[in-house]
Image 1 (cartoon, rainbow over the protein chains, first blue to last red):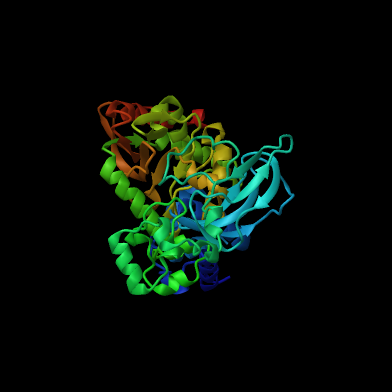
Image 2 (image 1 turned 135 degrees about the vertical axis):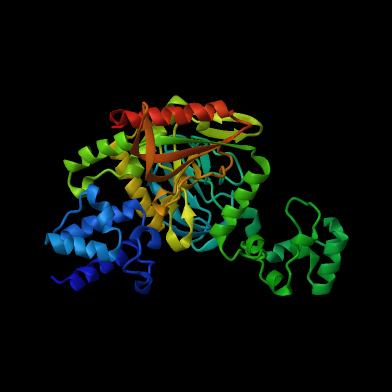
Amino acid sequence: MTQIEIQNIIIEEILNIAPDIEEDEIELNENIQRSLEIDSFDFLNMLVALKERIGVEVPEADYAKVDTVENMSGYFMERL
Amino acid sequence: MESAILMEWHVQVGDVVKKGQVIGEVETSKGVIEIEVFENGVITELLVEEESDCAVGTPLAIISNESATQEEVIQEKPQKEEAPIEPTPPQSVVQEEQPKPPKVEEPKEVSTIKPSDRIQISPAAKKRVQELGIDIATLAKEDGSPIQLQDIPTTKDNVEKPTKQEQVTSKEKPKDPMRNAIAKAMSLSNREIPHYYLNTTINVTPALKFLEELNAQRDISKRILPATLLIRACVKALQAVPQLNGFWVENEHQISPTINPGVAIALRKKGLITPALLDAGSLSLDETMEQFGDLIKRARGGKLKGSELSQQTITISNLGDLGVDEVYGVIYPPQVAVIGLGRISDAPWVIGDGLTVRKVLKATIAGDHRATDGRTGALFLDKLDKLLQNPKELL
């Protein structure tokens, strides 16, 4: 998997969790939760779905490292 | 909320229904709400057709008790804007927005009454009626009270087809019903409730450590969120300080025996809703997480139960996910308090005579000063703080 592919999976899962968000609203370098109003409950569900698809589990202690789409895809890339 | 649309019946005449069963759905300014039954019995009559718009407080269906012959009218509980919420619903009741049966009368029948006979009408109304060329008899009220200007439709078209929706259709529908409902409740709150505000800074490092250790042993899908632990802590603190959990109704403070916190859930572009986590006092931490998750899903999917939208006993507003430091809440009448939770952030913290860094949270309470004093709010915040220092008590 390339980082671009991972990035696309992350975007897909954001859209799954929050169907009311338009794809062009997602900024790769913005805080996912705050810029898109994804609450901690949605965020957890998103990580659960991403673990299924990518196979990497994010421990709570690492939440700060997966705050943006770009950081998150980089985080997954390093741990594949 | 003044009216709603009965979308769908889930039952038919002759069906046996049980307490808690969902028998239909109504669409309101707060989204789609499921109508529950509060008694066991048999549906003997459905008084409202699907997709009809109806005013709040009128009968929807009749249920008879299997044992008794006595029939009971199902009505949905009055919504909180109109009336005090009772912790337990009035007997046999699913009261909902419906025109009263007499309103369904055929227009022909009504117009047999001679205007000169007994219909009273205000001068302004009379002028409007003459301008529009409407037959006064079609406007006659069943209770015989005088016809006022506001009773007259703005155009003649509206009166030509008087149906059971008459009362509602003559009113202009608000553009955004949810916004309208919030606007009404908040205006009432600010006008009538003397709020007091208190805030306390809580060291949540022990609580987060506790969660981290708990979650480390669990699958990611079973993790407990800090937001859930905070709800659980608030509920436990309310058990210790029950005065904040209840209502101010007719100049009286009523403490609710059950704790149904309305938890603020952002619907993103569709606003914010605060459905009740019903009987949260009886839920363990895991159950709280499960129920809260279910509530969020259903709130966003638009499938909440009527009781969840009408039986809140206090509100918990957690805006921490949005990066807010502190929340100064506006009480949702007739509730008497709102708990505000801000974000968890790193902050300097003094321990003994040393300075260190801890995760901290600013918790606030807005209380109705008619019902309680600042002392009560202070006791609550103190209890909340103590519980979060000993998170094992929250399991």
